[in-house]
Length: 326
Image (cartoon, rainbow, N blue to C red; front, side, top):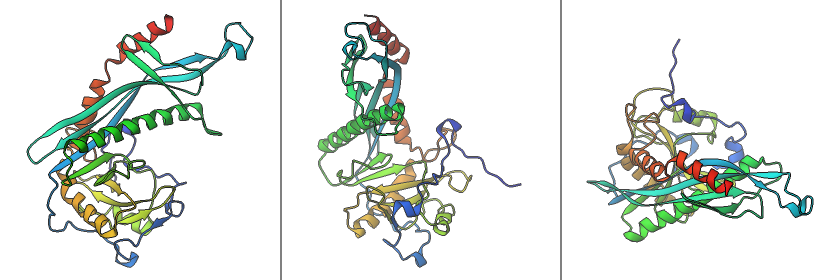
């Protein structure tokens, strides 16, 4: 029997998880962007393009500090009597930052950490504690959507906002055209950022037809697929790239990259070629990272630093309990 073990820590899931409801047909994929379907095959690294002077890596982290219950207003129940029902909410900390890598060094360009209270209770107010203020954010609950999903989405939206803020701020410190911005995760909501790519480490959708999908698992280190266009709700160009790493499962080391849909095709292809030259040098090794090689070294380091800046979870929980008692 031949088999391979996924190199990722099981706590992070698998590197490839297919969602049967999101297939190529549902995603409205246009394959013939760079090549005709008949000519699809691995795109080998071309002559190395001029590397950007700076590569900026953007990422964010989030952590739920406590689940809270917000009493419903007494006047909606029994007049002046104490409330007998409550609405669940979450108290969370979240942070985003940018690591700047040049040819000789890497440093934290900027970061920002916030705390928030996420709830569907319209009368909710910010919670002030000795460890900081949890600013109230009203979550939108959609029909048939679980409350937990609505709260998580509201938290993720706030995290995306500060990711965009720190990315724009990093660009403002050196307003030139000689950089590449790598956003950890989909580029949704951030396509207006120039020279930006979305970097997707795990795969939940099979965007390509079965025969072309199989080609992805046969890519060699540094090779990519031709560019294709995805148009399911929000459009973007995309391609798959294999990073260097130890042999393993067919999709080990495969990442999907996407960029803005308003770029000219020639510019997209140039950007795809650039990723082949730039990203492999940041690929992590198994003995250093359980999500190797997809979890790039700058992103892994940024995640550790941002989690440190969130503060001690036990102290934050205690501060929330004290504030609730008061």
